[in-house]
Length: 148
Image (cartoon, rainbow, N blue to C red; front, side, top):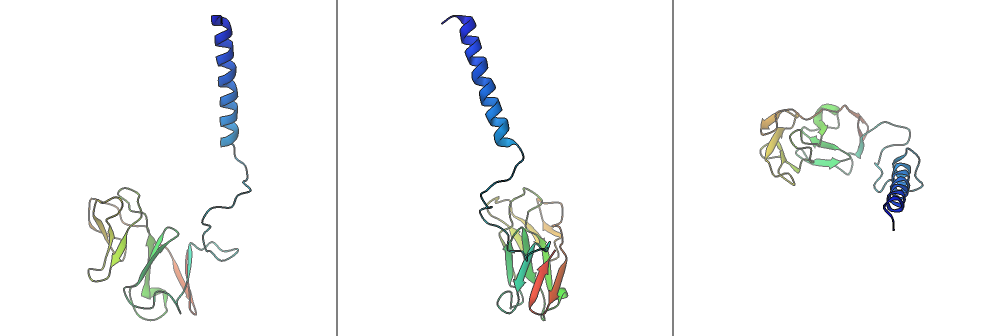
């Protein structure tokens, strides 16, 4: 094969590959639903909804779901009895691992393993994280808690 033919063939192959790659990255709908769609109420902009008659019944109970950590910090079904924060660690971007009710701290110890801890209000208790967790708005209607 001559050099000119080789360069032409390579150029055509690259053009086809680039075109296919750009087509795959184009904006467009997908017929495949998201693998784990969030459990939000229809038509709402809630990040998370919880049935308080079955979940988060005891002070210190927590749940991490849909990018939120929700902690029951007090008694009664009022917004003031809960704290809703981003579950994304501000140090390395991984999801916080747990809430330790005995220490009152949210711990980011896995998978990042760096050991940052936050208060139930989201403030940094121990680093290396330097920024607080973002806070979300909580509403309670009957036994339904909604985080927005």
